[in-house]
Image 1 (cartoon, rainbow, N blue to C red):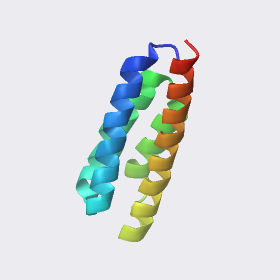
Image 2 (cartoon, rainbow, N blue to C red; image 1 turned 60 degrees about the vertical axis):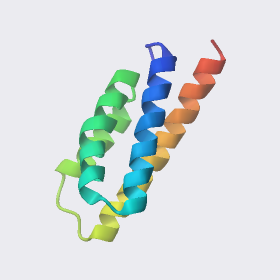
Image 3 (cartoon, rainbow, N blue to C red; image 1 turned 60 degrees about the horizontal axis):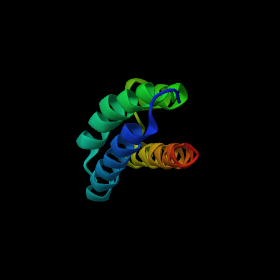
Length: 95
C-alpha cells in the first residue's frame, strides 16, 4: 500500500460495517452494489489489486447457482476485507 493508511483504514471500516449490516439483513442488492463498486474502489486505492479483481468477478462472472452460493462468496469477500483491515492497521501502527 503506497498511500497514507489513515484514510484507507477509515474507509475500510465504514465499508466493512456496511457489508456486515447488509449481510445480516440479507440485502443481496446492496451487497452486490457494495462488492462491485465500493470494495473494488477501495481495493484499487489501497493497492489490493487481487481483492479488486475478486470483487469484480463475484458480480460479473457466470450467474450464481443459488442465493446461498452468492452469500457464501460474500462471506469470503468480507473475510478478505477483514484481513486487509488487519494489514492496514498493522501498517498504521508501524508508522
